[in-house]
Length: 612
Image (tube, rainbow, N blue to C red; front, side):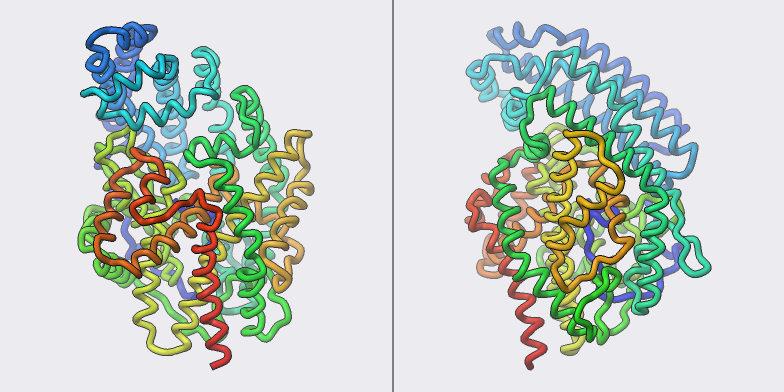
């Protein structure tokens, strides 16, 4: 999933944005005909009725059912009913969320989203007992029952939720935490979204929203880049009190939850939800930080040389190369490039991705109020995913389309696991998306007509990788500092800015000049608000895919079948088990250097072009 600059890959070329009228908008009628449709009302009433009936049937009875001779059957029936409810809850919430994302400033959409969220929160609170009671069952008894049909269908899910057992509270406290979310973290998330969507940045004579304003920072004209960067800094600074309040409140809210649940480290709850060991993430962080001189420092020194400068100003970091050909793509061209690259790997992959175009599962235009960035929302297994992007015709937009369609293919394939096991832990959630990008990049590189075009494509890919690996781990380091410091008291906006700058300079290196205004750029990154510590998933995914692609290059035979098996598994197997058929082990600290060496190799190729 790509949200705003949380996946901070920058395009190699700047171009005029295509007319929005020529771009597809998604058709959400596959979920519901409209917010006022009778189907929405009927399903909300069904949720209230079915959830109450489920609670009446099973609350306080799971231990008795498990002890019975037909425990596997009765528990299996209960889990099947629970899964149906989760699919229905997810359908309603997905529709409201997608409608809201399409225009976060529309009062009607905002109200509908808020109303549905309240009803779903109340309903889902009545279901909390189910996992809690399952986790209180005797380990040996549940394991024995889970080996028998029909309960064995959900054995992986039962084993997975068991990992949360040490951090669960009693029923009433869990219900309180759950219901308070709507007036707590969810409300602050919404305030952030609506504040960002409502900001306007004065650049020249225009008042631009966040997405086109950031787009100007990739213009070929340095004066335009500088003006855009300074405008972003000025507007963010004038709103820093609001962003600092949101950040402080959410960090405190997380600290309270972590303390009650018994998490010792600020990121441990994220590691648990990702089903990854803390030691693995720490090994990734150390490997990336040790590689800064060989990667980001080295590349930006080379880029500064291309620009004839000792140092690049921060608004030059994502600038197109001086010699890069100006390139823009129509929507149809972008579609054909991605589907062709997917076909080269597997016609089946291209066929699944093609459905997103022919069935109107994509929303592509840049619109006022639309959520910035890009994402692929899986919705629920009984429906299909939807992709949101802000397409402006650049090479980076083509790569973003490839990225999100990778997510979409993954989500379509994993849907067969059902509502409980389809969701993929973040350790593997970025695998298909980054792999789709790699396929598309390699296809474009193979079509390069000359050295100048090849260098531009290589530089663009290197910048993407640096942004996805080095920069995202710097974001992770910033979040760690912020959440640790917040435990000692509220942070001023200036203190947050200082924490931001403390990691940015070291990660980007001495060839990037971080001037006044840049200290505010933490404020618009939505992952810090919506999904604390999510960002390391991008680095995890990029390094993993680099290793995976290396296996693909060396041994094509059987790889496609193994790759589809990985995607189809969804969350039904742990990441280490899914990587075993490829001979990969992310728990080995040396594993991360495999992925980092690929980035280093591309930089070396760029340097060799200078010497040729």
